Amino acid sequence: PAVASRPSNIAISWSALRDQAMACTRCPLYHDATQTIFGEGPLDAPLVLIGEQPGDQEDLAGRPFVGPAGQLLDRALDEAGIDRARLYVTNAVKHFKHERRGKRRIHQTPETSEIQACRWWLDQELDILRPRIIVALGVTAARALLGKAVTISRTRGAPIALESGAEGWVTIHPSFLLRVPDEARKAQERARFVEELREIGTRV
Ligand code: URA
Image (tube, rainbow, N blue to C red; front, side):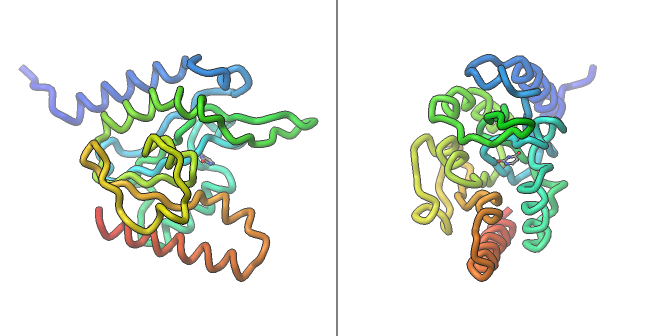
């Protein structure tokens, strides 16, 4: 008889969790979003990235980090020598929180209660994946990962021992780079982000 191997158990647990998350009503955000955007990537990835929440394009496409922030992330990962195809990428909050202005849907930062409600999924997701390294991109992801509010500037640059045994890192959210008005500063911030990713990449 076939003996269930670890990978197939993981795949079954992950699919079941994803299916449940698709029907999530744990906080009000499901009302106005198109769909739940669950994480994606190889289930045996040693490295997991956590973003904030899906944006407009992710909400429509059904996949994390495919819009402007995702493209920026892809280029930064590429420069850092990390292959996105070997990462698992997810979000702290799995529905797109926004307000409507005419035809446009404007991103809104999730509330602590929404982050907390969505940890139900993130914690189980990470439990199934058991990555060696988990990177929180921005304050929302950092709050979800560490269970408390932190500032990026004081938390970035060094590994954090997580209860699960994984190594945690906190860095900026790529969309922060889209908002830095000064070109020189933007280049500096971007270079620092790439360097952090490179350092993390050497540890997997
Ligand atoms: N920003 C995020 O934090 N996550 C996405 O999936 C897209 C944009």
